[in-house]
Structures are given as structure tokens and as C-alpha cells.
Amino acid sequence: MIIIFSILLFFFSCSSESEPINYGTDQCDHCRMTIMDKKFGAEIITKKGKAVKFDALECMINYQLENKINESDVDKYYCVDYSEPAKLKDAKEMTYLVSPKIKSPMGENISAYSGKNTAEKSLNDFGGEIFNWEGIKNRLKNNK
Image 1 (cartoon, rainbow, N blue to C red):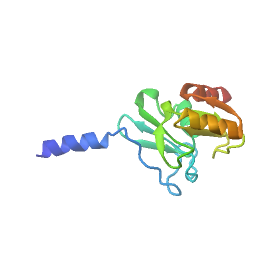
Image 2 (image 1 turned 90 degrees about the vertical axis):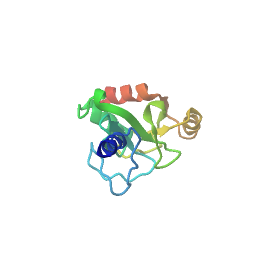
Image 3 (image 1 turned 30 degrees about the horizontal axis):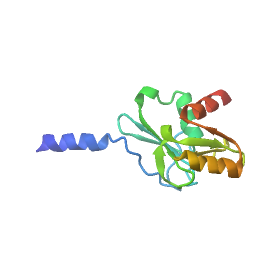
């Protein structure tokens, strides 16, 4: 019985599911600001099941660019969908808009959308430039 419980505990503790961000309480693991704006936020789930939380996509990417976590240690990347506040979605599947009219917490003006159509609507409303996961990572890397 103890062995079965231990195995179940291991599987549940190593989940690659996102952990909800507690806005107003959780702190960004990169810049140490309190995560406040429900339209923004990001999260890395490590292969060990640890959630590393961020107040903006740019903090998550910069955290990784500064070698605070290796790509090989990451199980999943999540980002908040701008059009569905506080909902974390698979960051690699999202479409990103960089627009000076949408102010993100760390000033890179990046908003994330789970649907390309929604991102294009925001592009029409606010202007800017659309990126996929690799494109937004490269943009932030080149801005460093």
C-alpha cells in the first residue's frame, strides 16, 4: 500500500500542468515584482514539476536567456492569453503581438493569444507586429 501511494504521489507531484498564478501575491522569479496584471503572466514547469512564475513573457524568456534554467530542464512553457485574463495556455502554440499601444508589465509591449485570428484582430485594433514562439524568443534575444 505504501509503495502504491508513493508512486501516485510521484506522478502527481511531477505534473506538467500549469499552476494558477495568484495575482497580487505571487512574485516574478525573474524581476521579483509582484504579479498583478491578469492580462499578462507566464510560467515554466520544470521536468521535476516545479512551477516558475513570471509577470510577463519577456521575464520568462530573459530568465532563460540569462541561463537561470536550461532548456533541457523545462517540461512546458505557459503564457497568459491576453484575451482571456489569467488563463495560462501552451506558450509554444500561441501567437504574439508586439504593439506600443498594449503596455506589458516589463515594457516590451508583448501580448499573447491562443488563436491567430484573435491576435490579428488585436493587430488591426492596435497595430504592431505578430510573432510565433520562435520569432518572439529571437526578438527578445536580439534586443538584449
